[in-house]
Structures are given as structure tokens and as C-alpha cells.
Length: 316
Image (tube, rainbow, N blue to C red; front, side, top):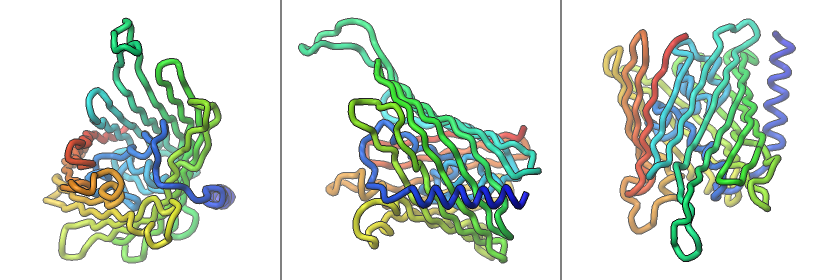
């Protein structure tokens, strides 16, 4: 097992080395990778980099699958504008002899589009667009209280008769403090490249560098989360830390969770300066039972765009 841990740590180090500096997220066919969140993580503003016992948090930090002791399968459906829908699913294998393994999938479907000519006349027929990422994750304990994980992704996209293929790697670390109430996490997501071009020019993979912290308060049933995203983008170093997201998960008894969050990156980059409104804010709720967990969240992107996520978690 020690040899496996050394190999895992080396893989994470190589991912960090070759990740380089990314730019703020541009329009790219692979942007759908950035929306892969569980409703629990989305409800706290995407600040779930250190969120234990949530199979869907593998999309934020692959090291987290090692901490999962509850439901080992999760599925999420996400509703966008018009006919655009997304989803993701994760299954964590229970055998821990050589660490933890998981498989996951992310998809986005753009719905159906009709063909028109240059004069605006329907010519008959229709086409669609689909984006899919299939992943495998490995995580293990590297040292006492320090966990690491790596995810390998194979990404496919297709719109009408155009298609592309890409490869990417996620790497993450999680450190649990002695107080058993505080976690620190770090991850690099989507460090990769397009192998088969979607168009004549290469499409960028949306690299994301994240740092996070959470703390379960004493005397108050609240899990506080704070994170920084897109730390690898170009620009002033201080400006990168303006990409902050915060959130809290409040416990009502043994079964009900209420969540609220805020993501300043969304508010800063997606909402018009004249009408920020509630852009960047999120709310969510969950019901936890011995059989199934059910979660729901709403994220405000702009005044006209709300992202709804519904998820279930089960134990197999």
C-alpha cells in the first residue's frame, strides 16, 4: 500500500506541474465540465471542495471519495434554459484494500434544432448536440490525515456532424485537522487537451485551480464552507482571490439539511453590471434517511437564468 500511496502522490504532483496557468473561462464546447456539481455542493455556492460523505463531490476534489462512508451512488439532473439539460452520476466501490475507486459520468444535451436556409426558411430535418465525459477515480490515504485522489477523464462532444475528443486529469488533496471538525482541500480540475478537434481550431479545456476550507461549528449545527476558484487564471494575483465562494449547511435534527451559498465568480463574470440582483447566490435543501438522500438546489446565474439541480443518493 505504501508503494501505491507514493505513486498517487507523484501523479498529483505531475498534474500540478503541467497544469500551468489558465485563463478565465471562455466559451468552449467543454465548459459543461464546470457545471458538474451535486445539489449539495451547488446549494453552498460550489464551495464543497472539502465536503465529506457526498459522492458527487468527486467533481470538485477526487480525494473526497476516500472519506465516503454513506451512500456510495449519486445521480444529479440539472435543468438549464429551454431544452438544455445536464446530469451526472457517480458510483464509489466499497472495497478499500488498495484505496477507493469510483466511476462517474457527466452529460449535457442541447435539445433538438431544425435546419433553416439563409433566408430563414425551414428545410426539413433536425439535429442535436451532446457532450459526455466518462471518468475513473482513485483515492487513498497518503499520510496521516492527508488524502489524495486522481481522476482520468475521456470527453466526447458532438453537434450535428461535428465531433471532438479530449482527455483531462483532475488531482486533489484533502487534509483533516486533529479537531475532527476542520478540513482543508486543494484541487486542479480539467488539466488536459483536445485530441480530436471539434472545429478547425483547438478548443480549450476549462482548467480550474481551487482551494477550500470547511469547519463544523461547536454549539451550532452548521457546517461552514469557504473556497477560492479559478486561481490559475491570468491576471493580478490578488484578483484571483476575488473568485471566492462561501456557503453553509444547517442541520435541523437528523433528517433535514438547509443550505445557502454565494459564488462571486458567477456574479462578477455572468451578470450585467447594471442588474446584478441575486446573481451568484444559491439555496438548497436535503432530506437524509437510512435508505435514500434527496437533495435540491437553485443557483442564480442572472436574473433570467436559474439552474435547478435535483439529486438522489443511494447505497449499493
